[in-house]
Image: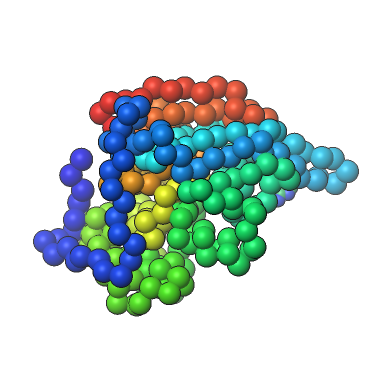
Length: 269
Ligand SMILES: Nc1ncnc2c1ncn2[C@@H]1O[C@H](COP(=O)(O)OP(=O)(O)OP(=O)(O)O)[C@@H](O)[C@H]1O
């Protein structure tokens, strides 16, 4: 796929982690996918919530291993636990038992301050409602995780601009979220998720608030950019057609357990 650049000038980035090298494709699941190199290992995770007197078992003995470069979708009925899974995997909500290992580090064995820093460097998030900071420009929104991580402002801005060109928003660098369409806001969010070159991107209904054209644009970009930067993606979605189109592996979650796994590597991807 040829990525839109939004203009002839594409800045280079300095002062941010170097781009990951291709890891080969022994499993035929994408040109940067290497199943011998797990980037996310979820093992034996249980997660319960209390609702009044009732105990809701959301995740039950849940396991998932994700390789570098894989694009996995999680579908399932409302309330099946898709968001909960992403929150536990992303270090946002603790499991009751089990472990979540990202790039070799056990997320839930870390102190919370270490986990927050680790998350900024190793995990990217894309949410249904974009979660951009309203008073910041597109560049500032994308560079924010880098600046919070101590990257010098100029390097962070250069990386943010490079990403915004790659998602086709080179002419919207100084626009604030309210001056962008939904699809453009989600492209900013995709750029932000990739800013620190994370090993894993967690996307929770990233197209749930977009029309079909914008959905396709955003998912094409998410797939292409994550492949280019060597990141694996877990995407929760209600959109079965998108899951069929983009996933290397499709998980269907029912009552907290994976009920079906469809592995259909598309060699074009
Ligand atoms: N903070 C919470 N406190 C109590 N119960 C919760 C909490 N978060 C989620 N739940 C419950 O856990 C279950 C799974 O919710 P979750 O949001 O993970 O499902 P989902 O598959 O993402 O649903 P949807 O497709 O509607 O977004 C639901 O029954 C929900 O009510």
